[in-house]
Image (cartoon, rainbow, N blue to C red; front, side, top):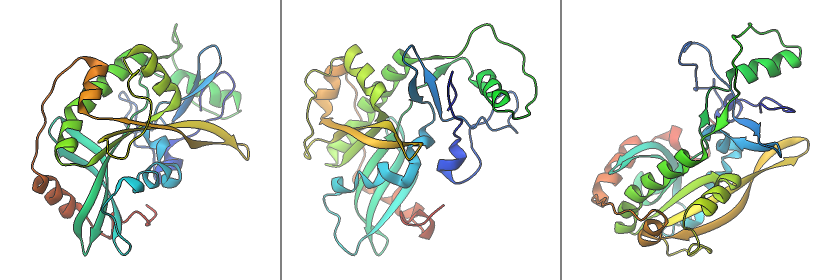
Length: 265
């Protein structure tokens, strides 16, 4: 975590391999920054979606939405599946003999920053007596792109949720609670105040809490809606339809022993 008083945590820790976020100017160098302290209250803000992979908690928190899952079925985690309106980060799949029985779409969304966090990262490491290369000083520090990030993800959700509603399946957006609070203030969420299993669009918000001296993600709140409810947030209309067989074919093609949820990557 980068900030005035902070610890450094890297997506390599949560992704179980080298951080895949690299510097545009130096692609051989991983950025390795998941969380920053920002604002007057030094809020701990997640800026990398891989931070949500801790303990695979966000995925197990979606199992109850697999309404057709039965004992004996395998659970698979399939990444980057294309549907109308874009691709979905993950599909949690219940399968029997490698045939899809049910699935849940899962999107991980964190805040984008304005300007790079790299100078602050290097400064933090030097303060920890870690030898790093000198960097060109910048006149302004990084900021949080709250408005654009929120608007972009809500528009994308509206394009995708019609597909899941049409198929009678669930779609989950995983976000940090501070980001959810912002969206509730800036967009029309007054009609979305509870969770219903029958809704296709589910929001799972997580907070960063200290446990045994370390920051851990913990489920903070759940709420849900449908296509019309999401449209009310934005005042937009979009259409997205796809046959169930198209998604199932992609999922079954990607299934393997490596995608089993219980296997450590």
